[in-house]
Length: 274
Ligand SMILES: Cc1ncc(C[n+]2csc(CCOP(=O)(O)OP(=O)(O)O)c2C)c(N)n1
Ligand SMILES: [Mg+2]
Image 1 (tube, rainbow, N blue to C red):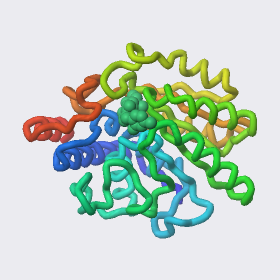
Image 2 (image 1 turned 135 degrees about the horizontal axis):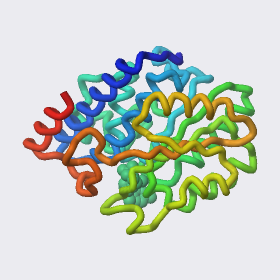
Image 3 (image 1 turned 90 degrees about the vertical axis):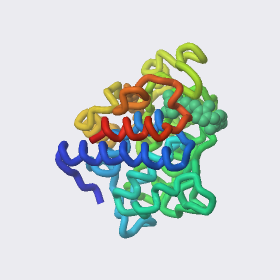
């Protein structure tokens, strides 16, 4: 169920999730720290800040809200949040990317049935969310679907096909969240294929757009509320974030998109996250 905690509690969870991300990826020796760290407050607000209606004791509750991590390479942030919420075991997080682990490099419903979708092939999330949103309407269900995109991912054409469709069909029970951290796989989005003006693009596609700081939990809570009360059009949150947020040497550093910290770097990161 939707349950809200105090800001201090939410920030403490965010810090714990950041620590989990570092520990998991360091133990695996591979993974994506940057885009996991930039999405922490988004996931924390969804799971623990009162945004999503879910019940970990009843993970397949038909009227639950859905979450699609379209930028599936940020799996560690999702696994840690799901573990904190009680969906999956916490003590196994450090088996990330190991053969036989449920915590594969990208979220996979074959191993974690509590997931709403398998993701990792970028560009598919909006389409999946639209299908779930339409199904909810057909079932007269209050379920909402949240879909988290990357900004590099936003270069995928399928996203804009979905954006057109959702506006035309007034899919107001879906909410897209763009983790707009400015960096993609091996460099800055603006140098590879610019996505700006992102806010204007979503507006032009007929969406209700909220432009905010994606690390500001109260701002995220207000935005999710605004999205839920916006009728007749879907909502997108364009979240200004910092890739690698919370670890000084990872912040705004494209190197840590897809590289694990070594032992010394992991120790330093965990020291910063005390
Ligand atoms: C269809 C597809 N193409 C390429 C990749 C490889 N890939 C994984 S992450 C990534 C960059 C994503 O950048 P962005 O969306 O900005 O993610 P973030 O900064 O949030 O980590 C790419 C190209 C993929 N997973 N799927
Ligand atoms: Mg990015």
